[in-house]
Image (cartoon, rainbow, N blue to C red; front, side, top):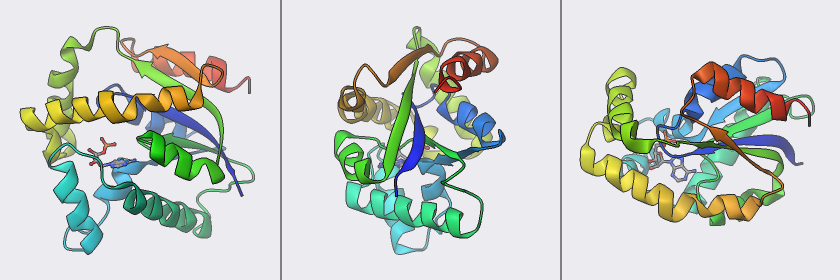
Length: 193
Ligand code: AMP
């Protein structure tokens, strides 16, 4: 079956997680952040070690591993009765992260919209990511070299996903606004569909 989905898209630190958490408490939306699925792995497991190896360099975990883990995790949320695909819209944050993943997931996702949180003034991005790193204990995000690599990975591998979905589905949102205004802009479009 295909899950009706909306994608939160944008650079690291653009506010996808903040919006995702808000969606997560609105009835009939189910938020899934791929980074959280990885961070919930035990670091002494094989997959946990793979995650640490790639994320600590600011790189993406290989696609097969990522998509398999994501499918398993979504299956578990359905089995646990937390996500009801026939009633809920899946709000994805951090996946698909490249064009290959978008292709692999096309059998599972019925994408209703892609919300591109675009920072018009990206100067504060690095400082923002570093503040969050300390607050949320994301160690990979505290290191300047890793942040720069994450931003490069985003530009090179993740941004082409916008083209994959195309103009009809992609909605550009000004991510420099307050979280409430960003949410208002997303909802204005999302609830119409
Ligand atoms: P995030 O919290 O979304 O920034 O993700 C943290 C790290 O987890 C990333 O830097 C990647 O190493 C890994 N990761 C998260 N989502 C994906 C994905 N869809 N594909 C590959 N790696 C991912």
